[in-house]
Image (tube, rainbow, N blue to C red; front, side):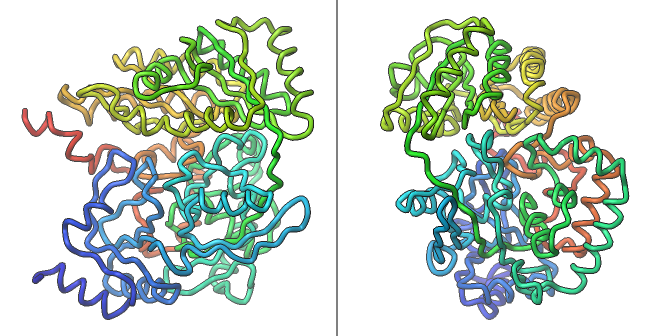
Length: 530
C-alpha cells in the first residue's frame, strides 16, 4: 500500500503495539453503527493495553486527528463514528477482563474492562447470584464502556435507574494521555480539581439553574452531560466519574470500571395486558408504575403486527392489541400481582382480553427475548421501507405519557408515516421508529421535518431528546432547545475543562450541523437516481 493511508498506518504502527487498520475494506466495518450514518475513519486502532491508549492519544493530539472511542457499534445516534482515528476494543486481553468480584451480602462489587460485552458480565454475575440492574436490551452487542458512555439503563430502570447509580470507579485516559483512576485522588490532574471546584461553586450558587436541574431529577434522561452530579457534594473523583457517564467519549477514554451489582431476584411474575387505544395504554402505565413493579414495557399494535410476520411468537402475544409487559419480582411478587389486578379493576381500564399471567421462568425469558429482538425484526418490515433511527429514544415525565403519545400519533399522521412505538414506558422512555418509504425522493428533508416536529412535542411535555442512548449526531442540534442557554453553557464549560482542543469525539454533543449530514448511501439511492 502506498499513499497517505500507508503513511498514517506506518506512523501509528510505530507508536502502538495493537492492530492498525487503514485498508478500505476493513474500515467499512467501523464506518457504520446502528444509526442512519456512514462516516469512514482514516484509521482504526485496536490498542493492546492501557499504555497503547496513552500513546495513541499523544500521537493524535500531535497530528491533529480526532479520536472516537467505539464499543460494540450498537449506538443508534451516530456517536461511535468519526472521520479521524476510531479506537475500537479488541476481543482479548485486559479489555475483556472481569475481576475483583466481592460479595458483601446484599450487593457485590465487580471490576470490568471497557470491552466486556454486557451479556457476558450479566452471565458472570448471575452465576454468583447477582445482576447489573442497568440491563440493556442490546446486551449481546453492547459493551460496558459503551454502556457508561451512553448512560445506559434498560427496562428495569423503573426500579433501579441508569448505570450511573451503579458506577463506583472509572479508569480513563485524558486528552493529554494521562491515566486517571477516579478512586485515587493523586492521579487527578490539578487543572481538573481547580476548574471543577470553581464550576461547582458557581453552579450551586445559581439558584435558577439548580432549581431547573432538581425538577428534572426524576426524568429519565441521557442528553448532554450529567450535570446532576453537581447537585451533590461529591469528592472530585466521584464527580468526574459521574460526568463521564453519558459523555459518549468526549471527556475521556474509559478503559476500566468498577460497578455495584444487586441481588438477582429469582422469583418473577410477568403480566401481559392488552389495550385497543394507545393513550389508554399509557394511562394504565401511569397507574401501574405507582405499584412496586420492576418493569413496564409498551409494544404498540403496529409493532406487534410486524413481529408476528417476522417470527414465531408465544401464544400469549397473539392478541391484536397494544401490549404492556409488566414484571414483578422478589418474595412479594404474588402479593404485588393482586395489587396490579385491583388497580386495573378499580380504574376501569378498557382491555381487549383478560390479562395473561405467567410465573414460569422459561415463559418469562421468552417474552423478554421477543422484546429484545424488536430492534432487529422491525428494521426492514417490507420492500422499500425501513424503520429508521430518527426520533428513537425520547422520554417524557410518566404523568405526561398519555398526552404525549396522542400528540406523537398526530405528528406521524401529518407526515404520512406509520410509527412503530415501543420501549420502557414505566420510565416514560419510548423508542419511536417511523417507517420511511425509501422509494420516495427527499428523504433528508423528510427526516429533518419529522425531527423538528416531534422534538417540539417532546420538549413541550417537559421531555428529553435522549432517554438512555446518550448523545450523537442525531440529537446534538436539539440539545440547546432542551436545556436552555444557561445549563447548555455549563455543559460547554465541562467540555472545555476536559478537552479544550476538541480532540475527543467532536460534533456529537455540541453541533449545529443538520442531523442528515453523513447519511448512509443506501438511504439515498433515490436521490442518486433522480
